[in-house]
Image (cartoon, rainbow, N blue to C red; front, side, top):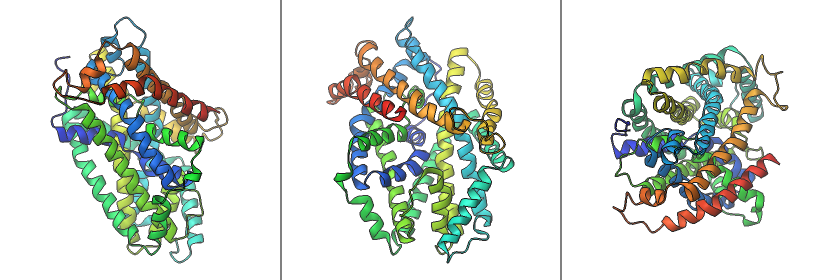
Amino acid sequence: MSTKSQFGSKIGLIAATVGSAIGLGNVWRFPAETQANGGAAFLLLYIACVFVLGVPVMLAEFSLGRGGRSDAVGVFKKLSPGKWWWIVGAVAILASYLILSYYMVVAGWTAEYLWQSITGNLYDAVHNSDIAASDAAFASRMNQYICSDTAPLLFTYAVIIINIIVLLGGVQKGIERLSNIMMPLLFVLLLALCAVTLSLPGAGEGLKFFLSPDFSKIDAGTVVNALGQTFFSLSLGMGILITYSSYYPSDTRLTRTSVIVSLMSLLVAVMMGCIIFPAVTTFGLDRHPLEGATLVFVTLPEVFAQLPASQLWSTIFFLLLFVAALTSTVSIAEVSIAFMQDRFKMTRLKSCMIVMLPLFALSAVCSLSFGSLESLKVFGMTIFDSLDAFTTNILLPLVSMGVCVYVGWFAPDGLLRKQITNDGQIRSRITSAVYLIIRYVAPLMIAAIMVSKLV
């Protein structure tokens, strides 16, 4: 489309794409996976997976987006008209919207904890000298909060409204402007937290676990977990990278962009490791598994409670978490908004409203599934957990596999090569290797992830 929106600057383009990739998966999933899979051995395996598998799959999505200059469905319709490949894009849009419905709830939790940190209420009735008491207090606080109906819903609605305001600004004045502010802020906050945790007396032991590999821990399951973390942390299979790359100018160097985005995502994960492992080791919390919401809403607030100026460090951390959540929700929402605009020729305002307003009901159901709707189960899980499992274990791997098979075997001749080389204007020595990976290696690895998760 000649009127297709584009990012206004190379910095904005990188910031927006990095913001779409960096999310809660880097903050809580990576430390949990690292602890469970041998520390530095898992880290090294994860780094290898990012560059051997993550970058080629990202390039496949970038090639689709910029080559088709449309939404996740439209790129397939443009590149292969009359074929059924558009279903891959449709599944990506479905997956992203289902993820958005419960991701808004998690973003609401981070907003609530940020507010409680700012006001000082987070540490009321928590005794800094008694770790066991503070652990129980934070766990009780988290359970009471998440399992209530009113507060989580109000903060979820607040996050939805903030997303609407940003998204109504469009690609340059909304998404790009937000990313240009939030991404530098995120790295400043990370550096501040690294400085305080690395100065703790037990920091050396924590870093030793994180940075000294134990290769005896590596087995087939560790490899699958590293692959899964790669796809999760780079936001592959959601349609985000296809959508964002459709806004890339024609002179954007896709290989360089993919490497920068992967490095930035990896850097955030490593910095989180440098924050979490020294902190939990110092206060004797490394005996407990670093699991998702418990890590973020119980273990780390407990760590901050032991530090001088606990309110300050807690506020900085939950601001960091909120920034990561906000840039993720905005990018996930843009997948569906771009679809409505491109497929149905809607205005930005109308497409935003059609996509975002139903979330006031859908996200409410996800939030209430921990409260008054807790008894409503799907395959023995809450609505929130069932959506998470369905999208993560089934839909996202299917989309990633579909993208790889299409770009590797069925896309118009030379699509990947033309996009990587900018129609022959730049040289690339990796095109053959990328083709090899997305044709043979990536589909097999994705199938392994999918089977292991289902089994």
